[in-house]
Length: 294
Image (tube, rainbow, N blue to C red; front, side, top):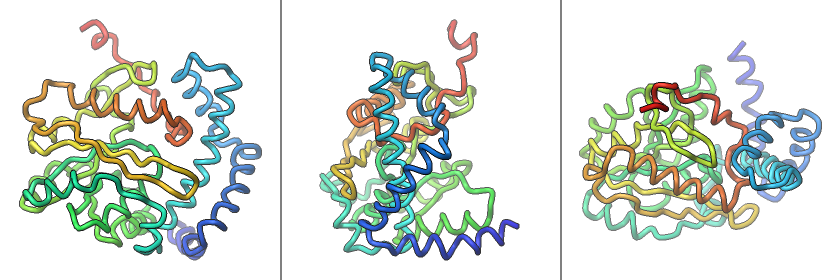
């Protein structure tokens, strides 16, 4: 059954990927109406997340942000399909890359980096655009799909322009194995870890668990940590904006890296809340009482 669904879906995905952006956005407008008003996909989750994150905002403001988010969410889905076929010219047209000098400096030194980012803006197109620069090879840490057919498709989409992938479970071992290469390993660090592997902090006005893996690996490898924001300038145009957070992670205190990159993401979300992934149940875990008392 998985194979049947995959092979029926694949031609549709490729067809959508070759459409020009202007036509893709017309489809996105239609998709928004269906997803928001008809299907009502995770409307309650999004509303609850926004209300808890912005308690100072009125119900009308929350509803307005929610609608903007769903419009963007539809854009994000269809834009991401472009990674199946998009070429260099189109990537450069739709994604600007600010301050590549930061990467060039470390690349010339043969110094690998750790990139930390969130589900903010179009991270899929951002990764594809990164591959065009004569700098570090981008390696993305990801959760493999259970469906082997779509797993192969996702790997193709993310690797076709030269990027690499590390499964989350073997990420540190893979980084050690590739330590002689000049790489930039990207952690999308705003997912929900288990309580046992979490650094707890206030994020968007809520008690939030944050993955400690990013800072632990950064300290062990002592790779400089760079935060990347993929900002949307307007529909169909993004800017990739890197910012150095830590030069020598080995010298940081426990929790310092996690706090810094989460605060940096929080600032982006507060400035442009409509382009963060609010459909995730980001706050489904609660801090254990023992941890709160410590």
